[in-house]
Length: 67
Image 1: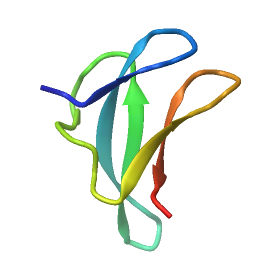
Image 2: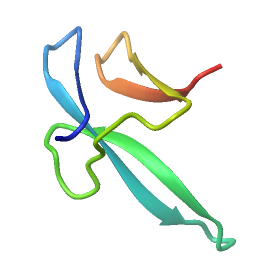
Image 3: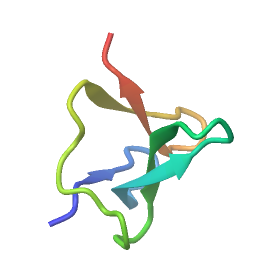
Image 4: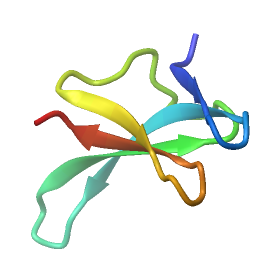
């Protein structure tokens, strides 16, 4: 089952996804993003060291590193 969160503002469910991106210098980084439907790259759990916050204006979920 994919990891999901519900927006407090809109009540819509968002699913966490990850994608491996290669930068111009050849370094590879993992990009995390939320989408309205579970698709390719959907994750089963929240990555270690991250937490979810929500944009107050739009209600979209954000993934932030824990301090």
